[in-house]
Every structure is written in structure tokens, then in C-alpha cells.
Image 1 (cartoon, rainbow, N blue to C red):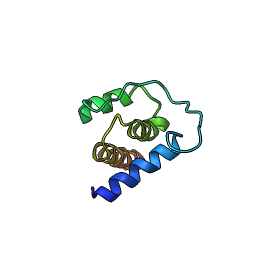
Image 2: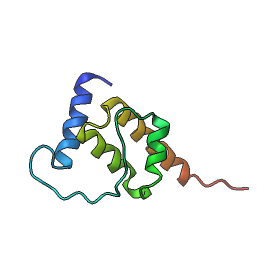
Image 3: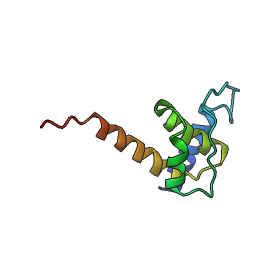
Image 4: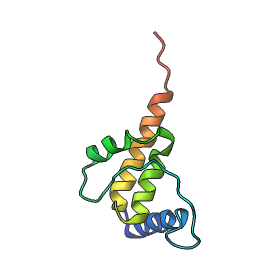
Length: 92
């Protein structure tokens, strides 16, 4: 990711979750994500959250500074790809 893209992604997440700007109420399943975790460890932690919350969990961790923009971008891309695979119907 380019530096401009990194800062835009972080700023967008901070605004979305009220870290920058107006306060908002966040109601996400409590999971622990931090900057020293590997991608595999983060995906394991995400299993504790409902599927509908997983992308938000990553953006929230990014907004709080618990994830780098590069790692968040990579995980969000993987989640999007996994979502597409789930929609594929395989005919016998």
C-alpha cells in the first residue's frame, strides 16, 4: 500500500468508529486483536465474532491502532475473497 492509501484507510476507520470526530456507540463482540499477532492468529480470533462483524472488527482494530494498515488491508481482502468463494455454487 502507498502511504497516502494507508493514512486514508486509517482516517476512514477512525472517523467511522468515533475515534476521530463525533462519539459513536460500538456494539461489537469482544475479541482481542493486537499488532503482534500473525494473520493466522487474527483469523482464529475472528472466529469468535459473528461473520457479519468480521470486517468491522478489523477496521475497529485499525482505528484503535491495534493493527497496521497493511495487515488490515490484507485481512479485509482475504475476507472479501472468502465471501466470494462461499457464494460459488458447485454443480455435480
